[in-house]
Image (cartoon, rainbow, N blue to C red; front, side):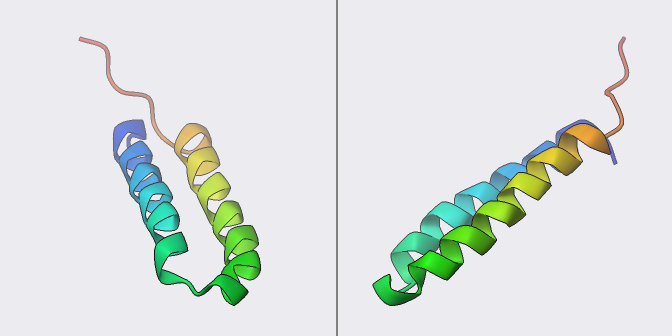
Amino acid sequence: MNRRTLSFIALAITMFYGVGFVVIPEDGRSGYAVIGALVVALAWIASGRFGKPDRQA
């Protein structure tokens, strides 16, 4: 996959992670924060590490 697609997916995951804090009850946020932060970090690392560079014109 190219880097733009992976970056878009990582951005969407990040946005859903932020919105999740509104949905998750306050007593469950500590686990959600840790697991969600790991997923977001892995998504951004994957976009930079495994994304194929965009072709230059």
